[in-house]
Picture 1 (cartoon, one colour):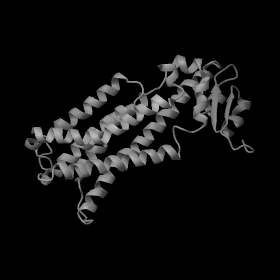
Picture 2: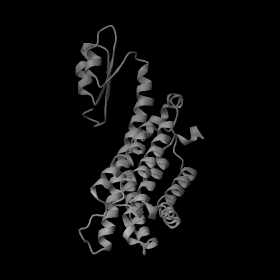
Picture 3: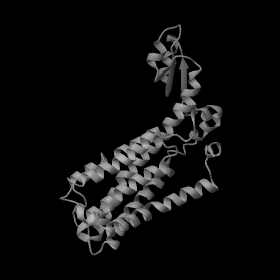
Picture 4: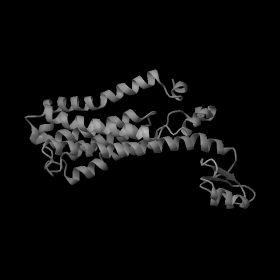
Length: 275
């Protein structure tokens, strides 16, 4: 550990293994005849040694990839709305006028996008049986590709692109209805976030579908209470619907195309086992 600088995992089942478990980066204790000293001092506890393979290859791999996707998406969600505020301020000569009021920002961070984003913790790229059958899939994690400076930069660029597209699209398509800029941009932002979650998901779980529909239903239902910020009669018009659809399509469609091309010409290792 000291010479290589690599992460270490220690596995033990007795009291004499406690110091080794505590010194390692990740300790796994096995409950055995020697008592529970090792399992109590460890980060993870298993009842049999044979469960170690599933702990690493299935749960450990899924935990790493899910944490990477969740952390990057939280950054994207916050940076996207910040980019919209920056574009809005720059268009109007950097006037210190907030694009959205506090209640809309709180709703955006909680009930409108929280459920779909946190449903990413249920995502998995391959089945548990496949992950156990092909332990080579675990090697991809050692390269740090799911969570690196490269992926962070990619998500930053995606956030800037989508935030700018939504804001400039709202200004161009709704030039005569600028008084409704909040309703236009906020609706496009919510739809974009829901579509981005759908783009990120590898394997759909029924709770993910519920989270997507529930968030959209919460936004539609809350329009009754948001009449101070959003004109309900305006967003029910056909002009509003098709223009917002165009803005959302422009912000999300290129990413869908890039994802398809990447999986077509440079597929990840797990896709060869799921196709």
